[in-house]
Image 1: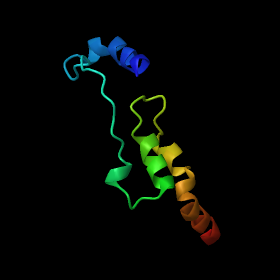
Image 2: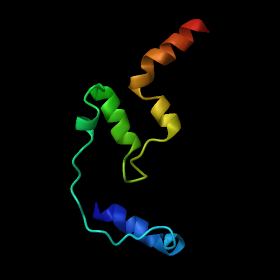
Image 3: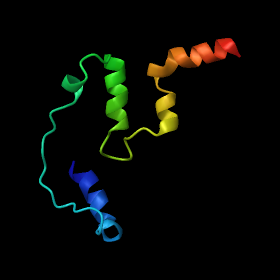
Image 4: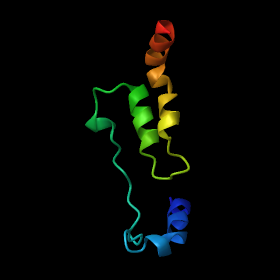
Length: 80
């Protein structure tokens, strides 16, 4: 999205030696077809972890609170 690219370009002076932001927009093809064995819940978690916009991307802490890991959290609480 243009707003995300603009945000990155504002910081480009510091990052210029690492990244060139002058690339054309391109539609993604999605990734669900690459992991058809993964549940919809897991695919949603992965998509949120891989979000291009850092403001939309989950942190590790947020990811661990995702409902995909609910059973593991419940099992740990039961053991405590």
